[in-house]
Amino acid sequence: MKKLLIIILLVFILTGCSDNTVKNVDKQTATITKKVTPTITEKVTPVDYTDIIANVMTIKIEALNDKDLDNYMTTISKSDEYYINEQKRWFTEMTKDGMKNYQLDITNIDQKDENTIIATINQKHFYNEQFDITYPLKLVFEEGMWKDAGYDFLVYEGDGFTLKYMKGETKVEEFATLIKEAYENLAEVFEEKPDENFQIKLFHDREMLRQRSIPSIGWLFTGWGEANESLKLYTGHENINEYLNTIQHELVHHITMRICNNNLPGWLADGVALEYGSYLQSGGNAITHKTATKEQLVGDFDFLENADGMWEATEQSETWSWYDTAHMYTYYIIEKYGHDKLMDMFYEAGKKPYNENVMNPDFAKQNAETMSEVMEKVLGQTKDEFYNDYIDWLNENY
Image (cartoon, rainbow, N blue to C red):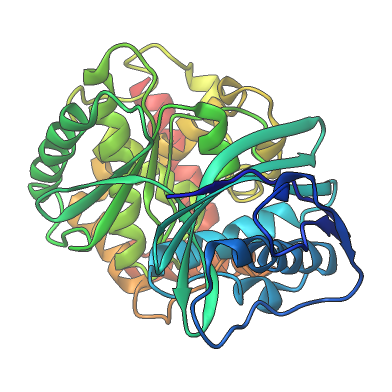
């Protein structure tokens, strides 16, 4: 296998390698001043990979600068539905106000087989601060084109799930065991099971986890899950047993968002994930665990449904008032109405078509409206009535 050491700088216009000879390939430079579509009619030899991959990166940069999702998605492989959904979200993240100065430098190319290339990408961009990360990107030959197929993970096939992990990960078996335990625990809570092809991605680099999933978040997180996307985990914490709650939390997201077709607001999604994920073994709530006071849990629906400040926080601890309040609302529903009524809310919302949140600017508003409808239909209360009863319950019990 030959390695071609290349440095290709892409910012608006691409400066890269254009000589198709092998000698001195890392020194060759040329300027491409027009858009080139990376469509070819036959598989190429290694010396051709430079221009082909450069063209793919060019389209990505142009699409980000133009905020053109359709053009960006022409570079993404259709072989993995989870990755397709994740890249749509990544695109919206990378085109937010304040994201700028994108660079994608190709520093190395390996030919894995005739249909697979591994390109080492050095990515730079600015968002409140300068970011600089390097990762192996897999490209596959598909429909006459070389397309981005995601981070070059290693793969462990579990029973009902696929575990993908970074090279150098030392805890694969341990995480596989925890995932199986989480599946068993949640099987006692929910009738629905996770997607049989569900993916879990392990990152021992916490910044890589953020940058390959939700790069606009101001704090480094341990786990992240979204509707119709993989569960993503940072593996660097010392006590691996503490991951069980995190895994269950994210699996609850996966299960319940599938039930409601992504039609309920984020506060309820996190409230139920905290109840049956984070608190499943220990029980209780933020007050009984002494992580919050009653006075910190009186936020109303406006507080819960308008959580933009969470994304701008620099530490996850700054968001816990929102999370704790979301959980206490959910805890109250279960205490007063029972688990089945809570689940009826998810099933009722699931009667609506799937609500795509990546490109829908009205997603939060629509789901807040659905929540009002569901509360009246299932609980027989308006939001105001619910909130007043919730405050009375807080005062009576705590």
